[in-house]
Structures are given as structure tokens and as C-alpha cells.
Amino acid sequence: MSQIWIALAHVKLCTDNDALETAKGAFVPVLGIASDLDAFVALCVDKLQALGFEAVEFEDVQPFKTRLETCEVSSEVIALADSLSVDFPFAYGTFHSYPS
Image (tube, rainbow, N blue to C red; front, side, top):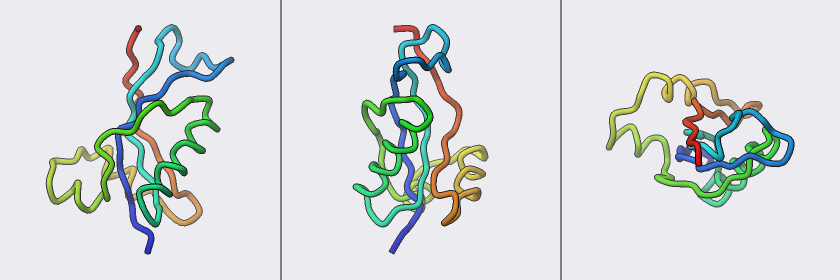
């Protein structure tokens, strides 16, 4: 059964992408509907690549329900989770870039 998953993605720019200006990479919260962890990671890798980013690593990967039960979750992230649907199974939050 599919459920909402959440993680913090570490991304780097693909060639010809200047979305982060001069930054070398960024961390971004990602959410998606998937049947299991592997399917969630595959979804994120695919969607981030389509946006021009290479997913380097995923941290704190867990079902969103678990995150809600164990952590304080920002209203921005809750809104992202609420926006997910079968037709739109992936969402991402604010990119937090770093210079090097």
C-alpha cells in the first residue's frame, strides 16, 4: 500500500543548470507517494533529475506519518504533503544552498 514518505535530499547541479546560481549544491526537503523506501528514492531521483539536479544522498527517510508522530513538522512541509495526489506524487520544499 502506498503512503507519503519524506526525506532531506542533498542535491548537486546537473550541467547547464544555474538554478542555484554560484552554489555547489543544496539540501531540500522532498516528499512523495510510494509503496516503500526504494520506490520513494527512485521517484525522488527521477523527479529531481527532471528538475536539473543530481541526488547525492537522502537523509532522515521515513514515512511522513512517523515524522508527524516523532517530530515537529513545519506548516510548509505539511502543506507539501497535503498537495500530493496520485496525479502529483512528488513535492519539494525550499532549497537551502551552500557555496562549496
